[in-house]
Image 1 (cartoon, one colour):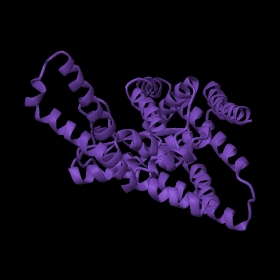
Image 2 (spheres, one colour):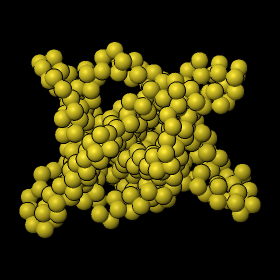
Image 3 (cartoon, one colour):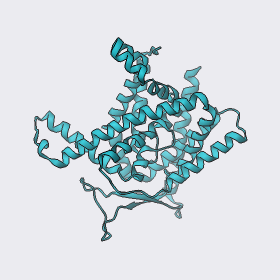
Image 4 (cartoon, rainbow, N blue to C red):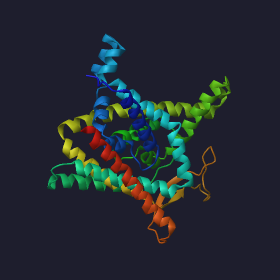
Length: 337
């Protein structure tokens, strides 16, 4: 049965999509955490889970309206609308802050992850040895992923499709950053920078009625890559949601314990004090992408040795991040009453 939403709820849902889209763009941050903390994670998973054979049967036999209502279409449409808007707006602003105020952005995200862990652990009732064991396994898995060595770029379309399946996991698995996974697979720049920029340039060209890009093999290749990546992402959303929906119905508390652990382990990925390790060619020179940006190979974490103004600001922004999540926690508590 479709949920009837007020106009303000619809607007708020678009903003949730904006937040998810921005989080998905940043390596180390998971859009699934946003869904989890703001309180629509289960509805998101169960809505995606309904994209199945029955939904297709409704589409072909009873029309789009029946299909749309069955899959909670309004919810998914508004959420994905927010994500799409974010991709071409909020995430661009976030890119600016990551370039000019990187340390403070990571500090804020670090605080938000701490706040997320607090929020979810508080909501979890009945901790015992069994759930603490699953929590520990989740922490170990999260930490282990943060120390994996990245691969090199690969634009093979079968591999790109697989990247789509895996990369979209950040939307469905809180704590697993899809962007960070794409860095590990070597295709972050190709799939989330170059191909998106190629799409943006292509749309701009079409608006200007300029079709010269059809003779540009590099542009056509990037568009193909983006299309295949998108198809893989859709396939990943549908298949992962089926699996997660099953787990949430059969093993809800165990799944939540693992997810809380996984999110805790992901703190290593968003550790504020880290240096970029750039991709080098065989001569030891930094490799640049098509837009002249250095390609990041990995991050080297370190402990601060200078406890001056920068250190104080990092601590300040960590608390800002925590307070943002506490404000969301307060919002949920107030409006669920």
